[in-house]
Length: 118
Image (cartoon, rainbow, N blue to C red; front, side):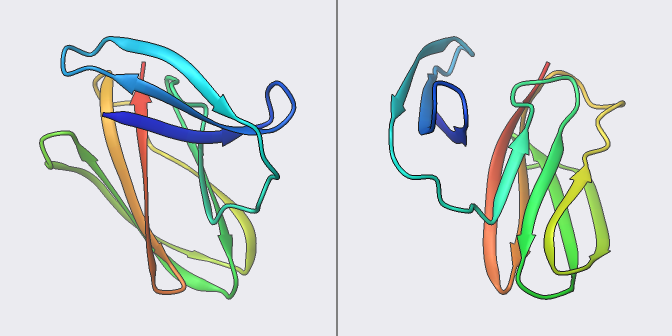
């Protein structure tokens, strides 16, 4: 599995890190490039809790699905959000450490992000 994200460390870039089936992390690699506005970001990642940042072109009801790596649904929320950049904290207090898949839809486009809870 490869986890990919964008952040502002070391100027700007897109970063990737391999994750083996045994849960071991490989080296982080980076590609420099112009920053584009991403419709979805999840931070901090990894971390004990996370915030989902969404860029919405129009106000909409956003449904967030959080599943573990076996596909088991561990959280389902529906949140009305205005247009623009919005932040939604994930409810992570009762989640065990591990990898989770966050899924939502913005303007009809399905979006996904993987989050590592510490």
